[in-house]
Amino acid sequence: MNPRLPTFASVLLASVAFTGVLAGQQLLHLDQDGDGYLGPGDFAVLASDEERDDLPCDVEALDPELEYDLNFRAGYNARIPLRALAGRGNSLRVVFRITPLDTAQDPVYMQRRYRVPNIDAGAQGHANLSGKYRLGPGSYKVDWLMRDRMEKVCSSSWEIAAETEEGFEKLAATPKTSLVAPFDEEVFYEEPPVMRPRGELGHVKLIINFTPTNLAMAGLSAYDLNSVVSMARAIAREPEFGLFSVVAYQSQRELIFFEQNRATQIDFPALGEALADVRGGTVDIETLQDKESSRRFLLELLEQNLIHGESDPDAIIFLGPKLVFDRSAKTAVISPLEITSSPIFYLIYNRNPRVYPWRDAISSGLSNQVIDEFNISEAKDFGEALQAVLARLASSETLTAAE
Image (cartoon, rainbow, N blue to C red; front, side, top):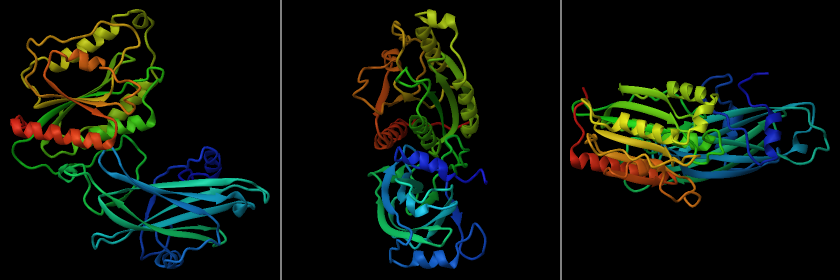
């Protein structure tokens, strides 16, 4: 069995919770034979507006949703009766075509394959199959089909619209109109190079918190991890920034686990590897018994990154979930003496603000400083915060030439 293909057994298990296996789609081409090319039978079905149900299934279109990297995510859920797949194994192939309606851009074709195990003729219930893809702003038509080994077909089509927020089109992370691309489930993939103008570019320092606000959790949930990393990607795509310094920490471990200094590009794969090592770590027993260790860790973090130096960045951005301590600790307030003159921003990711509405440790620690704080509960909030950060830097002319 090809290990790259999601097995239908895992899909059946996932269907109990009404979720699907989410693997990346394969792009298809039109003019050759083979696994990566679209056959004439599939093309004929997609070209017809007639819906077919000789393979019974219900298809639900998922409307575009704005992600924290300011791309849109859309997709589908397909529900198939198990009795329709009864027999000694089967296979399913999902093919869909996404056509931009606002431009003359060519359609994009994608596919996914599934292996189906033996299923009894009297099997009850359904299997749920899901797929996702990325979109830029615009309107689209989706033509979709599923074909089994016996050439039975289920097909459907729908139209969707991804509407960007006002002003977001000026942000570099916002994709161009009518962009269509597969959805990559990898969180720490390498970021493509950004075309940056010559001349004055800024140096931004990102201080990223990977500690869950809910301290009962050992680490960030998959959704929260992807959200935090996506926001860092959006910042890294802004062409006004030419150099990046990164400090990543985990408060539960009281550990700075990744640092990058004055680089032209953030090394996301290395960041992911460093975080993986932290997840498997342990907390020293002496640290657990020391009620003041959290305060000292935070104070050292702030002092190391905010005290004035010879090469202060043009902007310092704290990013991540609200930081709370699991033990009582005095507020670690940093002294204003010899503090950097760089603008300081705090992008506070708090998906459930009603659960924790209070000020967190970072805000308290910087209470003596002039900082701009932004509460981020959804992707729209982040886009607005990034607009405000760039506007302040532009108006104050703090961006200087990157050396």
